[in-house]
Image 1: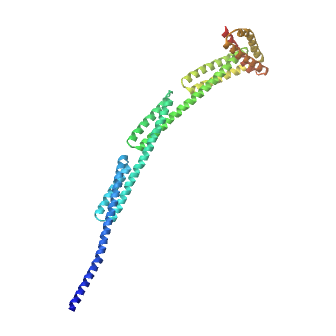
Image 2 (image 1 turned 180 degrees about the vertical axis):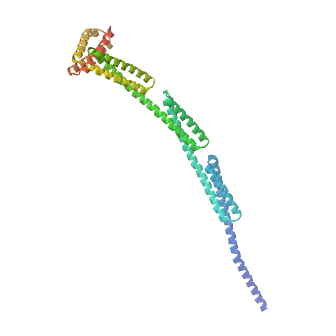
Image 3 (image 1 turned 90 degrees about the horizontal axis):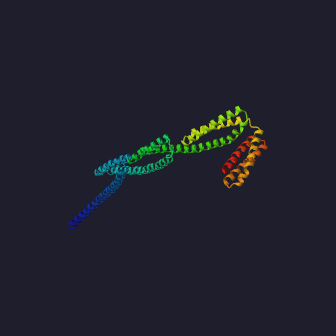
Length: 359
């Protein structure tokens, strides 16, 4: 009986030992399997994340048609495919490394498409700016007849058209290059048209100066008829040449040949000055005094007619003549004989004109 109890106790001890051993072995195995399942789930999640990023990259690359982005996307696809193969072969560490690399390439592809979009906006703004400059150049060149300007304008328009075609084909570098070239040419057109306008104003100013000099010289040269005959003949010849050149200068100005108009007018001015120097050598106090006395006699004969008349314009012209006559006297007494002679001749012209108006 005692032996039976002893054996029973011994059997129970063995069972306990076996149970303990099972627990000791089973628990780690369970923990390992659970950890492996968790790792597998985590890696699957990483692979799915990469799939999402690659899909986004595909959409962006398809819209942008950027070659660099397309190459990066192909690399991402290949890396992701290798990652899934490694995952199926339970090589988890390598699968993780590959899927993360694939995701990085996909993000880089998206980055290039965004950069490309920014570049596209920059090129589009450049094209729009060139359009504005070409439009302004067209407007400025519209009133001019200059072959070089119109040739440049046509070149700018053609290059801009090509730039727009390249932009539609998404060839941004060529589009930018051509639109900037078109803009540079259009700016040359603007520069030439602005230069033409400045030359227009300069030419008009030069011609008007010569006109005033000719008017002033006319009185002096005609007053010098009492001088030496040889000097007067030469002065008259020079003066007539000057007037002829000045007429040609105005013709050139009206034809928009501004540079030649300026040159012709300046040559006319030189001839007038030579004629004046010849006449001024012969201007004497007696000559000036005679001119002033002639005007006095003309005024005495005409003053009653002017006052008796009812022509306001004739009276105003007569009064201007008297004003110049007074200046002639002042210059004469100051010894400024040339200036006095000019004023006397102007006075004579105005007084004669006033008298003609009332007849």
